[in-house]
Structures are given as C-alpha cells and as structure tokens.
Image 1: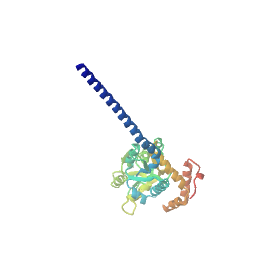
Image 2 (image 1 turned 90 degrees about the horizontal axis):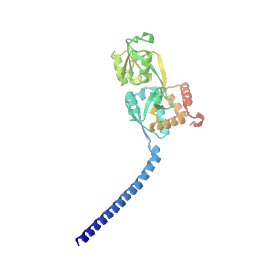
Image 3 (image 1 turned 60 degrees about the vertical axis):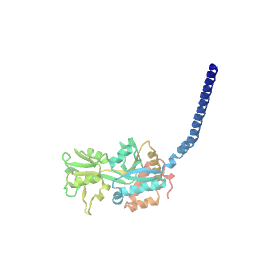
Image 4 (image 1 turned 90 degrees about the vertical axis):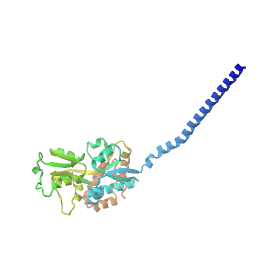
Length: 298
C-alpha cells in the first residue's frame, strides 16, 4: 500500500514538472516572438530614415562670433555663404561660440560636427574634410601704433615675442618666420591685451579678425610688413563621420548657388569688387567635382 502511494506521488511530481517545463518553454517562445515583432519595424524605420532625420548640425564659430559678423568682411561674407548653402540643402546650423583650441579638440573627439573659419592645410587634410572656398583672409604681423617697427628687417627674432592662437595656422607661420619666443594663447582678445600692455611685441593673426579690438575709432594696431600668407576661409569636418556627409550637402548647396545674382549681390554688399567675385568663382569652379555647367544660374 505504501509502495503504491509512493509510486502515485512520484508520478504526480513528474507530471507536474513536465507541465511546468512545457509552460516555461511556451512562455519563453512567446517572449522571443513578441520581441522580434516589436523590434523589427523600429530597426527598419531607423535605417531607412536616418539621413533624412538628421537636419541639425552643430558648428563651432569664433568666441566673438556676433562681433566678427559685423566687423570682419571675410568672416561676415563667409558665414552668409554657408548659411545660404545650408538653407538650400535643408541643413539647420546650430552655432556654438568657442575658442579655436576648444573647437579643434571637440571636432577631433566628435563632440561637435563642423568648425567654421578654418584654413585648409596639408596637415589638416590628412584627417579633415573641407568645404568649398569662401572669402579670403590674410595672416600678418601686428603691433601697437607706438612701435616704430615697420619692416620685417627691424624685428629682433632672438629677443622679441610674438603671440598666436594655439594650434592655428599662424602658430606654424611664427615658427617658419623664425621667432624664438612664441606665446600661444586661447583667446584673441587676451593676445591684444598682452600686446597693448607691452608683455609681447607682436601678434600674428588673420587681418579680418583684428578690426573690432580697438575700443575707440583710432587704430590701435598696425601691420608690420606684407602679409605672410593668404588663405580661403572654409568649414571643416572630421573625415569618416556623419558630419562629413552633411558638409558634402553644404558643398552641393554652394555649387548650386555660386552663380546666382543673390550671391553676386552679397559680395557687393560686403564691399568686394566684381573682379574679386569673378576670381572667387574661378577658384570654386576649379574645386568642383563636376563641371560648373551642370548647375543652373538663378
């Protein structure tokens, strides 16, 4: 009798365990199927619309961006050209004002998308992509109006100190020029204060960004010698990123617009001659991947 009860109990336990195993298996199967059904449409939607959904682009601009737009012809014209090209391609620019050093670091770390106001160099081209050319600006030496030095031959390269922005084209030029004492700073305004206080003798920077540093109408800076280099301002992106693809869209916008009357009028608005505009067109056409005849004049 006891053996019969034990056998019945064992059979009930086995049956219970079997039923539990089946239920668990069915439950797990339903979970997997439901997850696949829910997840699959989301993956398809994301992959198919990722390029269309990415409208906003973060672009680093100078820390005194608004002042530069008003006071610097090359800066203001270049920014307007980029705005027009971005609008034509439905790209929403989100400017973030920062120092040049910070902008370069964030671009390399992919903490922002684009950097405005960059000069194209061989070294930067190894890791960055660039927009088509915008307005030109030149790099030159500047000093105070009280300094009697007017020519390069009057500069004491072993004694005099030149100030530059860290990680800039002008820093490279200072080394090439032969200065033995180079002071690198993060902010342009800081360099001007150091110059006016006599702590440095010269600053080497783009001509277009020096205009608004004087707090009065009379010039507070004077140029020494001829320009050391002339460059086209551009926008840069890190190669191999989504932002590099967006930069190509902006280039397409420039290619569509550069022959339009609106752009020609824009150059005139900023005081540039028609000869300058024609030279800019030739430069841009030279860099176009396709023949300029493919683009319609508006």
